[in-house]
Length: 223
Image 1 (cartoon, one colour):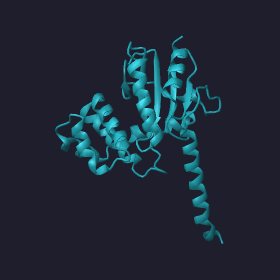
Image 2: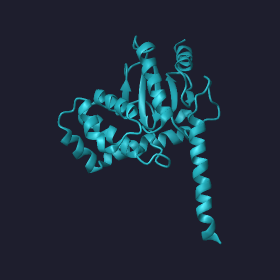
Image 3: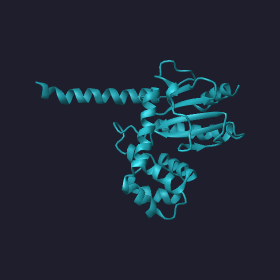
Image 4: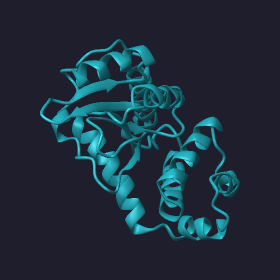
């Protein structure tokens, strides 16, 4: 009897995971989410983070994302718009952290690993170009990583291939640390973001917010 129930229970559990991830990722209205775990556990922004904008910005938008999440793709474009406008004067920056949902996206971890390799061999600018390409090509095929790497300006793609094939312990640990921190602060789906301002409690954005909603929260944070 126990074995006969195993498959149905697994299907039910899988459905719950997928439904939860989809619900969390849906666009939301701006708010401070008081039921989102413990945002205070968010890891401080450091030299190992991928930062777009001024590393010393007053406002840091820390995003935990999955390259195969369609809502993350939309939010990625939204945050680019935020940095281009709200971050133009250096007051707002964007931090990208890995939260691959391998349970529902089989290539998510592979994409995260490829992006970290690009950062290792090409630097921060190459990472952001690669991230943009992954989202633009969603669902990206891992067979195209070499092509994507060349598009970032990395000419020696064999260096990237070597990094990816080696399964670097350091890179894997970085991805695991990002994912664990996402879980620690209360994320159960992607995108999951926090607006950080020194001296103020983190503001949670639990899902793919619109540009107007993010702008409103950023403006409040700058006040």
